[in-house]
Length: 346
Image: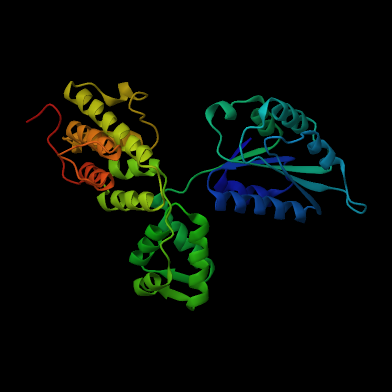
């Protein structure tokens, strides 16, 4: 069965454990904590021995059944943790996983740790077998809007709180890096006594450990969060993200906005273009809002061509000589807050 990550604690406290737990997700801290909670519950129910298996590309899948069958002299049950960092076991591994899940020994509790799977892997026979045999937990990525509340809850565990401004600062400096965020929260517990933390205390103590992916940038652009979008771009540049990848993300988003504005001008509902415009999740709300706001999307798209020319060492007289600065100007223009005239209206 599928189980939401936030429901795991209640599930573990109710009674007998499932035979198989699969934890899948790209949020390392949340995945680690989920596995820790399962392991602790298993130990409380008598699973004293533990074996960890790392399934790399050339893994010998016979080790899964061998490892499960080997018990210590005085142990009656064991936890087998199978870590599959690539998320795709291949044909041999998939068959071995499915067979093991369907005939798991009674003395074994299996924990499978995976990254977030793509659609094809999630629909595979081995993934279905794991879900049928026990509990599948998808660990969601923590969005920026949820981060202040998450930090506040972590501070409360150490009898601390913080002002709203301090929480926002913490979120800004730790976005996209929950492991580092937890470390910074723990540091605050060591530096300051219980009670409310001021903005000044947080600013002095907390490092800027935010991490972004190029694809995070498009959401900030669509949301009209100019300061966050430009900060993301600067961080991506400082971390050595390839300019062509970042430019492609920006260009692709502008192409979508151009198509969305054309549809709105023609009176066509954007819902009819759901797949073409990638209107899934938060994008269902953000793309229509941005399409109505960004009237100069075609001109910004044309400027992306100049960024590409400059990055390749070619001339583009109207563009900044630094392609990153030119791209920052484009991102800023796309993320500005001013609402433009409705498409099709003066």
